[in-house]
Image (cartoon, rainbow, N blue to C red):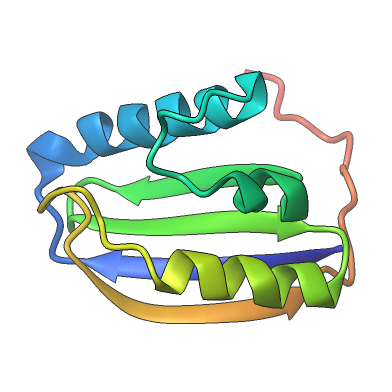
Length: 113
């Protein structure tokens, strides 16, 4: 499994939720086969999961796109690099990297609060 992580800084904290909703709606449209979404259909074919991590205080976002193979991760990276954020809620992209997931383990440990 591989993950492409793109980091954005300088986003508008008040628009972060709107950006997340746009992303979620676009992904849902892809899942339904709806051609009206701005996301390319091929993106749904090469990815298995998307996470959006938010640091509202600093206006930073990290988007993690999971893929089964390194080739799929490179293709997802190329697709996403061609796209521009819908509005200033994202800020500017400061990095985009691909990692192999070497470990994904649940600890099963939780605090007793």
